Structure formats: structure tokens, C-alpha cells
Amino acid sequence: MTIYHPDSQAIIPDGMRRIADAYQSSPAVSVPGAGLIFVSGQVGGDEAGQPIADPEAQFVAAIKSLREILEAAGGTLADVVEITTYFTSMADLPAFANVKERFFTTTPYPAWTAIGVNELALPGLRVEIKATASLKNPDGPQR
Image (cartoon, rainbow, N blue to C red; front, side):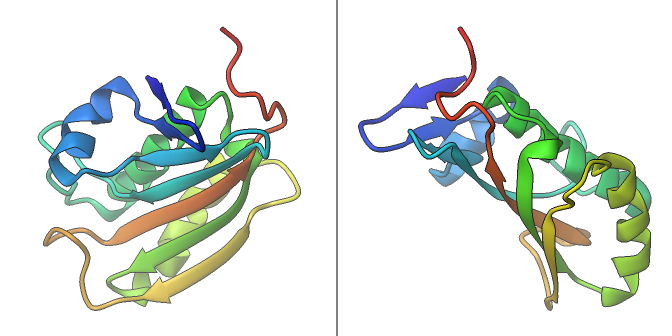
């Protein structure tokens, strides 16, 4: 679902409404006319919102969450121009890179910054992914 505001548009897929309301934040915000989508940090949680224990499965779920938001905005992972990943252990970087290359398959690949942190929002989270996308159709999804 997309909510329109005079200066920006909140991108909130239906399955993310509860969390967006609870934390008074948007999974993503688009800038009309510019075609830019700013995606909040996405994590790999299960249906109950708890971190997935298996690292690879958690990384896959986080990227799929990012993809869901971009699709709600009328884009794809190919529109991502920049990602920032926050890791609770930099030892996870190679495994994440392997998962990432399965999803980001078109060039140019997004610019990527990987940062090590002490902790994330929930115990058990290993990565959080923040992204910026530039849509090829800056007017947003076709209706």
C-alpha cells in the first residue's frame, strides 16, 4: 500500500503495516519526481517477527523483505543503487556476500558499505540492510 503525502510517499506493504504503526516509521519513503526510494533497515525475521536462527536463511529473508518493499514502490532489486549492511559479526560478511550475489544479478551492482556493530534491534539479528533505489519510472507504480 502506498500512502501519499505532499512532499513524499510512504511505502508500506500490507504485511509490514503492524510494525510500521508500532514504531511510527515507514519501511520506505519515495521522493516524487526524483524516482528515489529510501528503504529503512530490513532484517530477516520469521512470521512472528523473531530473528531467523540460520544465518543464510536470515540473510535471504532480509533481502526478500527489501525486494517486497521495492516491488510495492514499483521497482525491483535491479533499481538499487546503494546498500549499507550492518553486521553484528563481520565474520558473516562472506556468507552474506554469497547470498547477495544470488539476488543482485544485474550491472551496475549497487554501491555497498558493510559496517560492524555491537548489536541490532533484536537479539539474534545478524544483519540489517538499508538501501536506496532509483526507479526507472519516477512517477511510481502504474495503476
